[in-house]
Image 1 (cartoon, one colour):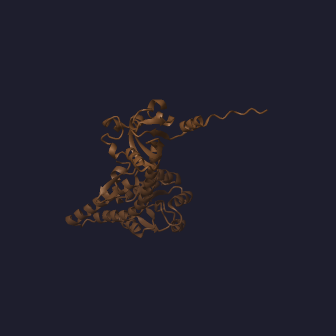
Image 2: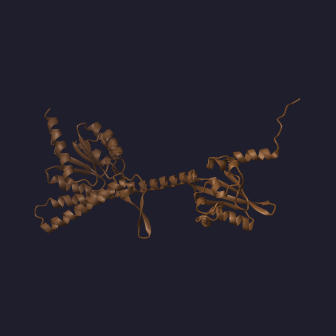
Image 3: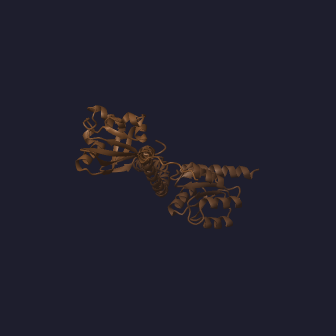
Length: 238
Length: 128
């Protein structure tokens, strides 16, 4: 006779699945109070799931703006513009799910986070509850931004290297002939002054070329309606 | 042996002209070449001991040219000229056998000083 492990009841299985999900799951009633929270939701406020039940959604998440209004997440000063609040309002109004809304939020225990929110309406008798799933993609976003910065810097370095090499040739020609002309004894003072000015300008261009060769970061500045690289701030010599 | 000769290897004709004007007026005999291969032909006929090379040459690059010259003329004073400078590149130049390294745009006075110092060394070695 084979011994088989008894299968737990479905609600228990579902509860375990909910608690192992790597996303925040909250179920909020029509007054935006937490009816159910999973383990991931509790971890962002460093509590247990059952301690979140009954709290307003904003307070449960540890939203810093929750404190600016009444304890009823949705009427704080910043709340009307809060993507989470707007998503929930729309879900209740239209009885339709909202998917993957990006919402930066300031959370008490974690600081500014980039969140991706989805909502699903749940019928609960005459009430409309909302299930909210929240994915924290802050680290992924930072990695992507860092990757983009690195790619921009790589492109800048490649371009700078090519430009520096090409520019150095005409710079050598100008500076070389200036030096040779300045050695002539019969030059009048005006010509000497002009050659001196040319030489100084060339040396300034040479310095810019040097800075371009030593770019270590990607810093930009405004130029009319465009953005250009700030060579001084981007180079190692700065 | 007449040591007051220089060889300039650069594919930019204007840069070779600058060396011609700057060094001829100082009593040097100036030879120019626009490639590594042409430079080696000149050196095969006349082993010049003061050499300025652009690192970025068509065909054989300046580093390989320096290594070849160093093998054939061990006492040569060889100076690198480059448009793109870095400490990394400098260490490669030293490894290849260059005696000194100039980033363009280099001042005539600096190049003349390097050549003169090289010439003084060669004269001193000749007396050994």
